[in-house]
Length: 224
Image (cartoon, rainbow, N blue to C red; front, side, top):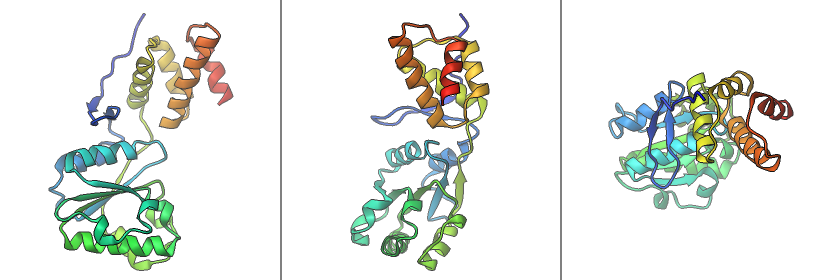
């Protein structure tokens, strides 16, 4: 039985799953690698689809920087001076979910300004390009657009293969290389689809007592 090796670099997250580094996410990873030397920038925005690994990267960054971590919804009722640690780092995930809420936008604007005063680096994530969001506080839009954007692209073949092998292995399942190759050619290119397919294949293979083969996988993909 031919098996595909995991060729991509792993980044260990304390208490969390490994993060697989590939060309499609290396730009964001490199920002974390060079922290706190951010070339004169006070913060960055990581842009990627749902389940692209943005939250993993947030925790990878927080592990290195000891940053405080918030979701955008959590800052609405917070006093901005309580949110921002001095001379440190701050993560706010999913900022796009708060755009359109004037109160949230106003508080985020104050957080950013105070963080800059306090020499605190900012790490934001979003699933939507900032240019495509309808801001209520235009000063916030201007401030956010001043930060560099690190985009996470759709998984390439190597990352998809690595994700599949890793997730199957975590469930104690060994899948032949030809099955992995088939999945990569036919599945939607996102981490959510990989997660669903592996979970479904594991469940059905146990309940139906069947080996995971190409016809078995084809049935699952046809139903997705």
